[in-house]
Length: 89
Image (cartoon, rainbow, N blue to C red; front, side, top):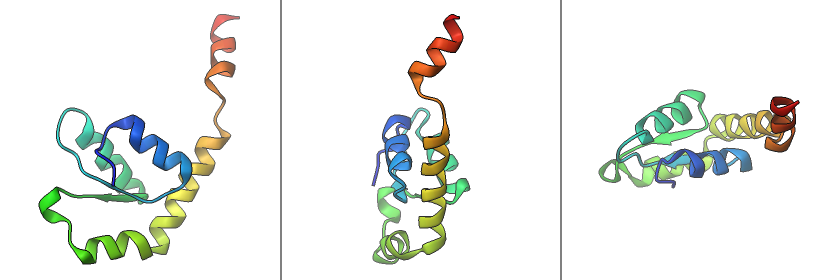
């Protein structure tokens, strides 16, 4: 479970791990929606967490594949150092 901030969500996506995002304000609802729409995780409030929801998070092969696909996409992106060089030359 991640709190829904973009840096924590990105870290989980980079690792290829399906995530349960618990949005609670600011941009966290946008992050939660993006993760859910991509199929790489679920979004829920604390009150909505059930054993069935957690079971789905841990066993849904489609969600696991999507999270791994996002991880592969992130790995293919240029590093911040590479991007900085392009921006400064």
